[in-house]
Structures are given as structure tokens and as C-alpha cells.
Length: 282
Image (cartoon, rainbow, N blue to C red):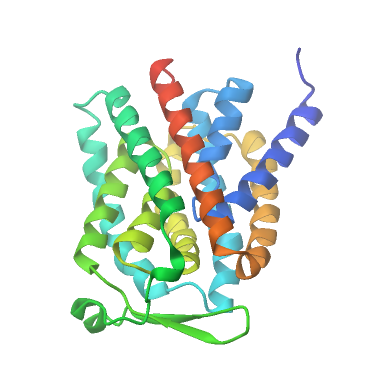
């Protein structure tokens, strides 16, 4: 059944609100949900879906990052430091993509995401001592910080394994360059699991970083004509609204529930990637 432009835009707007909310809470940026909505729901060409998703990621990052920074949750120094690795990896991934079949990369990516989802749910937040002595490199680069808790008290944390986190961020960039999607899931996991940064700080810092990465990629897609204003406009507005409410909910939400939401979303991304790979949509 053919949809009128008004109904189509309304459905996109509602889907974008949900994408912005989930992307803001989990640090994924919401782009992967938009890609799923456009490609699987409406049969939009993958390249146009990615172009819209990039604009979406910028909108999510802009809508949520400012609020998180104001509330003192985001660690800007960590974000800018790790963004170097992500950008470098993305360039390498784009080069590798010329020689490697994306189907194999997508399936590997999906397997890693599923493993990451299980690992994230099973991790016990209460057993982690964030105040334990961290990495000397983290101290030298002044990456350690603090964030406000429910009671208004500042909770300090120290950064661990800076080199390992930086390496995983480079891998996130490589996968982003190969697959053309945001690498928010790996950014969160690199900070949360590898560097032992509190989950809320990881998700908010990931949101801050996603906008920088997406902006660079969006320019290329815009030059090639893969960003359709009519497609992107209702999505951007919806995502901004969803991201705003997400930024208000995050400081009050239970971390365990947030982990479950995060795992459910990246598991969905894994299924979507396998589907797109096997059906030749990548």
C-alpha cells in the first residue's frame, strides 16, 4: 500500500523520536535504528539510509551532548583523545573495504556485537572500584574525572588501560569505515569494559564523539547526493526531541536497566547487519 508523503513523514518522525531516545541513553547515536527503519521498513536504498543516519547521528550528538556536558557527566578530554583513534581507524577501514567483501565483515561485526551484549549484561557494576589507581598515562593526559550521582554527590573515577582503549577505538573506526554505520557500540564498550569508566560517562562521552565522526562522513555523502533533505528533515526533528528527553532521563535511570537496554539495542543491530549482509543490501 502506497503511503502519502504526510503519513510517511509522520511515521519517520515517530521512529526518529524513538531512535533519538534510545541513541541518547545508550550512546549509539540512533543512526542504526534509522537505517533499520528505512531499509527494512520502507525499502530505502542503503546509501540514502546511511546518509540520513549520519545526519541523525549529528542531531543526536548535538541534542544530547550539550546537556550532558552541562550536567558534568561527559568527559570531553577522553572524547577528544579517543576521537583521534576512531578517525584514523575509519580511514584505514575505508581502504580495507576496497579489497574485502563487506558480507564477511558484517557477519564478524554481528558476532562481536552479540558477544558484547552478553558481556555487558553479565557485568556487575557494583563490583567495580572506579576510584582504584588508574593508568599512569591517564594521569599524564589528565583523563581522570568525576560525575554527579543521584544525590548530587560527585563520584570520582580513574581511567585504566588507556592504550587498550585507544586500540579498541581504532578498531571501532575501522568497522565504521567498512560498514558505513556509527561505531557507538564499540566506543561505549571500549570505555566501559576496557578503560573501566562508569557506564553513564561512557555513553555520554560516546554521544559527544559520534557527532564529530558523523560530520566528516556526512560531507562526503552530501557531495555524492546521498542526503535527501525530504527524508532527513522529519528524522532530524524527531531525533532531537528524543535525544532531549533521553538526556533528562539518563541521570535518573538505573544502570542495570541501562545495560539491558544497551545490550538489546546492539543485539538488534547485529541481527540487522546479518540480514543486510545475507540479502545483499550492504
